[in-house]
Length: 81
Length: 81
Image 1: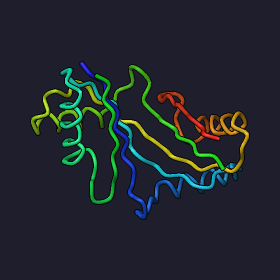
Image 2: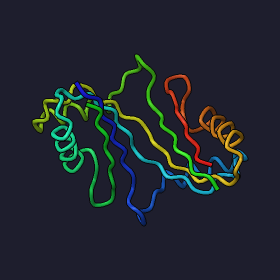
Image 3: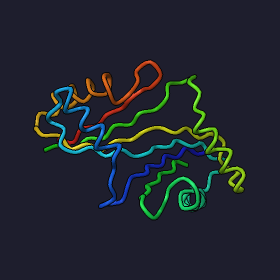
């Protein structure tokens, strides 16, 4: 059994309207120190198997096919095996 | 200027229907090794200031008030100052 984490963020240059909205809301609450905010997705997984290289390869495929949209998003994965 | 990261995840015992849906979709694509999947939020921030303890305190407030729902979500924050 391995645990894995995936971070999915918009690529540089892709607009992040949700992040802009949250940033504006924080400023309206007085948190003027926040200069930039980007929202991404985060997933925690449990994977059967012990072969870390193989699990990373499979998880990369899952990101390409389903978890992320590789046209506009970057993903970063970590597997603890 | 400091960079910060916030992870927001459902508390233990809170249902995660989005995670369950993604898990089912992965299994239908043949990724049977995925035994559990939970979806959270991830935010990257840029904050004005250098006082790390102060920035962490302020960011904790932002999580309590706006970024997370402390009734059902946990948050974890890191500030590099």
